[in-house]
Figure 1: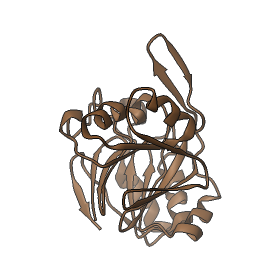
Figure 2 (figure 1 turned 180 degrees about the vertical axis):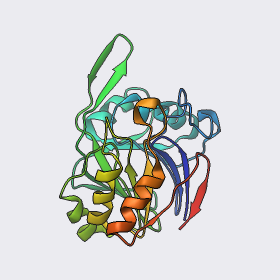
Figure 3 (figure 1 turned 90 degrees about the vertical axis):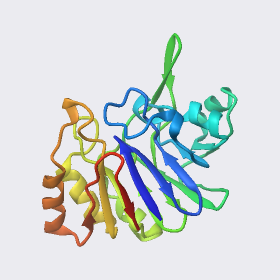
Figure 4 (figure 1 turned 135 degrees about the vertical axis):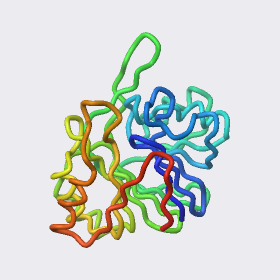
Length: 226
């Protein structure tokens, strides 16, 4: 499996299928690729904020990819004329040869539409099995039930926000790593703007104190073979 960080919380997973997660590319100063260059089969969206929903509809319209999201967001994106599958916490959706399980995240969620902004149900994390098991936490703080995610799904890779302010910071993310016990952890959702500027090496230092997980610090556009 190949995992490429596209900047912020956006990743492209190339396993049994090509899975794009939280494709905020247009307007992202860290984006490694423009939205019109991405190819994928499935798009996972953890919540409705613009730095996560991002270019999902436009990319799905161009590629024919299916958007996987919580059911209320799926109802919204279907109205834009793209394919979607909406499910909910604890549920697993099989899309092509990839299994996606929806797990909790503690954050907020809304969608900005022309002339209004409205609630987009709740934010989620996603456990994606496309050859290896990858946990994308979405935007969240650390929470004790991450231990259940570990026990139920045994993630090989965890993608955790470390930016602070809107999500957990390096200290909380290191504790999340301890709870999850993945083989590899990738920091995300940091450095995009000054408000979430963080040193990923500090996160790595904290992880080494309490976990055997390997910290993979990627640059936007850099890939990791798992």
